[in-house]
Image (spheres, rainbow, N blue to C red):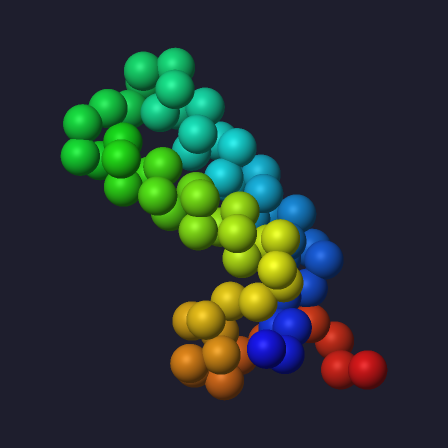
Length: 67
């Protein structure tokens, strides 16, 4: 697995994941939409931890600078 997520992208993903989780756990968003946001937030968090995004790989994209 070649890393394809830059540090700035990782930070943005973590912030979005925190926002989605806080919206869900404070009750501002609930139901099916709340669960979808929570799952998307978990995916963002996991992809930021491993620095790899499967969608980026599928489309040949990368936000990481070439070494």
